[in-house]
Image 1: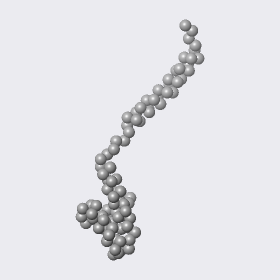
Image 2: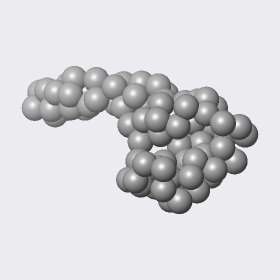
Image 3: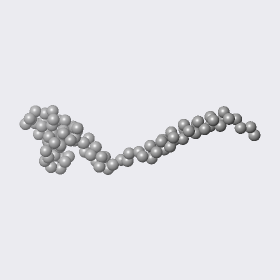
Image 4: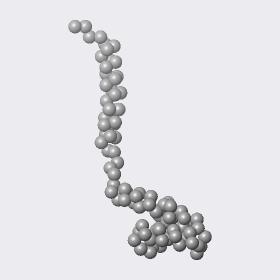
Length: 92
């Protein structure tokens, strides 16, 4: 059996280069961010409130559009709220 030094060196170099990459890839896949129920709930609420908050933010003060937007926000949140702060949270 004839051992070729070039083949051994080539195999060693491949091992030294590929092993850290393989370990890093495996580690990054195992550390994927997990879906947080709180974030999912907030995203769903923000999605539902985006249109009413845009209407509220862009409407004239004491207009029909502003009142309708406030009513829509009230329906989603289940009562009267601080519209300015709620819409700032939704639109940020």
